[in-house]
Image (cartoon, rainbow over all chains, first blue to last red; front, side, top):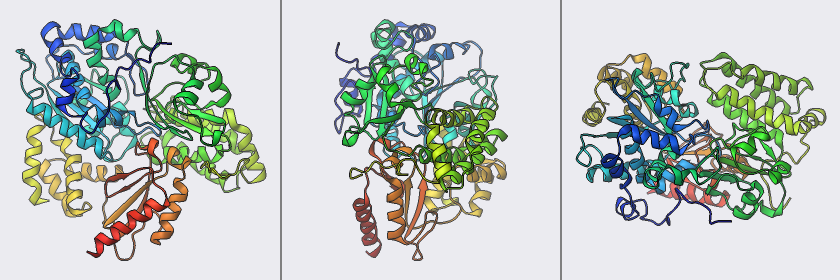
Length: 433
Length: 159
């Protein structure tokens, strides 16, 4: 097998590698110069469409097709916003980019802004982020001082300003329309679509919201051409994916993965397997809103969207959580449902009431007061949510519950019948046990 | 809030025309940084300054998890209890913190020095479990490390 492709993590991280001087020494800010000097905005969009890059936030929508909706001659302002509200539990890949390659994001946003003729761009960053916020604002100051932002670039009349906007602690603001409502200084309520955000987004103007990782690939796509990008990954999911892996795993962290490699090899060879040599019970492959994949399924599938779809899951946001044998799945679902209940924005009845209902049921089961109908009730509420809410959060919570109930239903039956866990009732994998 | 108006004016100059409403979050964040929480009088002052309805500010304050309407301890500890942190012992860590400080999550010690809260995923899963102390991340924590953290803050308070 060839050396694994590196499109984003292609430099050595040092205490100074995030600074402008070193980014430029690595060839930084040449892609935006190439785009402005040799390409029209339309050609940039076409290049991105040809590359086939899909959104890295979880929905896998073609970035080029999203951009294609923007009419460059409609005479109204367009906005661009990077979604850095990374909050999907298990996901910390965008944080890696913000901390270690902030200029890659800033340059790539200039390319997107040029293609979409954006005067004002935004980075919506989650409010809790500390170092990532300091790194990206410091990088932006450097970029302003060097004249990449706020001034006409390379002899053209294209100028772009960028504002880093901090959230204030809300999971739902990671949803693109909720994010824009929050950026308008209101509660982060998601909006009904249509109209799409590319038609009516921020302050009712056409707006493109892209994930940090999606945007960060643009500099490479312009520099090396769309065909080089397509040459990596699989036919349907070109490029690489940043995967953040955590939980019961020996080498947690962020890895750049070329989709299509065997899942098992990634877990055991690259990430060192499970502590104490335990077996994998299951893996949450792409943030907690994707369905769990059992250890047996991990052994036989490849790590890409197509293969994960055959077991009812997907790459999602790239937030992978490994769960070792012996972990109580009832308690795990309790953590997930508590989270969804806590983060429901409260706009839609099925999600607002349903999450609370599911949370109360699972609490009751864990307290040893579950009744046999509870399992069916959890499935029923999940089904009621699916497709009946403005945003995907109601669906996602249902998928998480259905995934666990389908594959580990016997643990729930045991807990309800015997009023205690089939395992030791812990989530922690203690070396001594 | 009045002494922050110059800062807010500078911030407003960076936003495009017509983005006054967008200033609500950054201004509230700054007010809270300054005072430790958002007081009743701040709401009226900010509504008047930005020209947005008072209800918009009230709504925002009650929606976002990071905004506070009352003071917390001088050393405010938030401990993540989501999936990855729980898989690596967050529950035990939170119990330990509770016992050590003599308060439950959501409470403040009688001397006003420490307050404890639970939090959901902070994107620090690869270095779980984690706590945030006054906005600063402390990762790969265990009982001994949080003890040291608390002691360091006690010493700071005594000085």
